[in-house]
Image: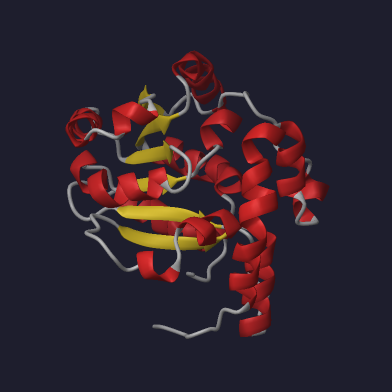
Length: 242
């Protein structure tokens, strides 16, 4: 985990977005779903084409960080950060692309971005299927298309663990300075899914709100996979790094 606040995260993202062609900055909001999909043995293996900024998302993660460090650190969910990130991108003339979500979300996404951030440079929306992403040739071609769009920031919404693994393998090919592993953000931006009320999120109950909205899709994540991940978080320790 990287301990920072919203201002620090946005500053790092804005700085990385100005640098294309090198090793991109990848940003993940860490919650129990992340802990489930990436056990310790998988967090350091494999070839990575990005450097990761891991932000606190879920309430259990935030509570454990506070227990271990003695300091309260804010939760930085992608859905909460995205508005400020797009504000910064619009002000800086940054080109933003979106990867993920269904094809039918494209028009609503474009309208939302152009209406809320009229000075934003929207580089495009790609909506591959799971079968598409299982092909290395397809993924290389997709990354090359994103490179051709000259996107500085790519919002990657493929769901865990697919989005993180795709970024690790193909993020460097896109040429983008920043890749945001932000899951359901495409659905929020396109108006397909409603965010929980602020009081629900502040109480650490956004998972329950999402479960009520999408029980068939999310029941296993929250009710079966979540408890063992929570236990793993409670067993975790803290090592400070420079």
